[in-house]
Amino acid sequence: QVQLLESGGGLVQAGGSLRLSCAASGRIFGIDVMGWYRQAPGKQRELVATITNGGSTHYADSVKGRFTISRAENTVYLQMNSLKPEDTAVYYCMSRVLGLYYWGQGTQVTVSS
Image 1 (spheres, rainbow, N blue to C red):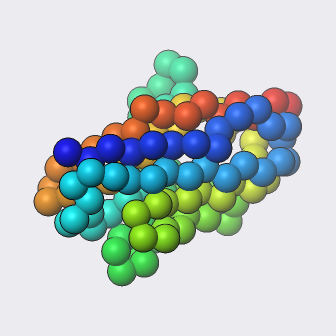
Image 2 (cartoon, rainbow, N blue to C red):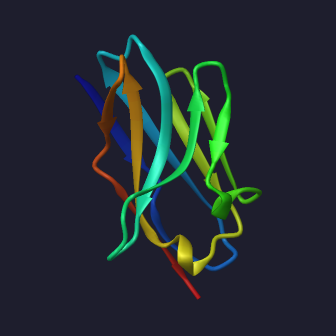
């Protein structure tokens, strides 16, 4: 099992910034991808950004140029700049270990206009 603990969500005005953190613990050997997904009310969960062990990153088109994913050992970060009201969602941390996906409990990000 892998446990993921997220932090850093909150309320921010449009144009502001937030930084999310997610620390992995437990059976972390074998994590090859970590990332962030989000789910807005009434919508499906969607990919935000991922990062591999080798440092390769992938972003949703909607966040390119505004969000930056990074990783330090078993912690993954999401720096979110120029936030928009449509970024409002619950953000979930994800890790993949030997083909299995693990999820954090989610952290709320609310962007006011």
